[in-house]
Image (cartoon, rainbow over all chains, first blue to last red; front, side, top):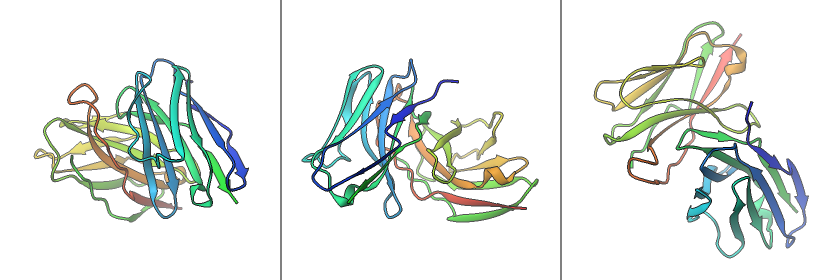
Length: 111
Length: 114
């Protein structure tokens, strides 16, 4: 049963620290999405990759967020420096189109 | 790009059919209707999608009106585990027009009552 995996599942860090979240998409999927979910904003799209190329990262604060796919089995989302307002659950999803399969999420708390 | 509107909440008795509506009156001809659900503290889960014909899978049925301006997701025999937020989105496939930014909105919170 193929699944999207995300690490870490939980992360608590202090303001100003670097945070790296990792995602392993389902083998064979050519699209990867990063989302952020908070109570106030709901589910927000941060970045989208197709065939490992970033096609849209307009949802990300460019000065502190970066997303990459160094290879087909790994997608990363990095925040540097982190701020308390970045506290949220970050989801990665992979798919062949908008039929997306989500990972369990990384719950980030920045104090 | 079509926007979708859904009622914020619904209740359904356990064992009965849950019918969740979605309005997408501005949907374009090449946009599909996708449904997802999110059970508390889990990642969203893909349920089903369709273009204009009704679709059925092991999880649910999707009924799309002939004019495609609205659709209904049907859970035929709701269980307590179906309690979740259900999202309806409209999007083209990647091959028929490339990428488009879609938003999930607030969805419908379905509460299945014992």
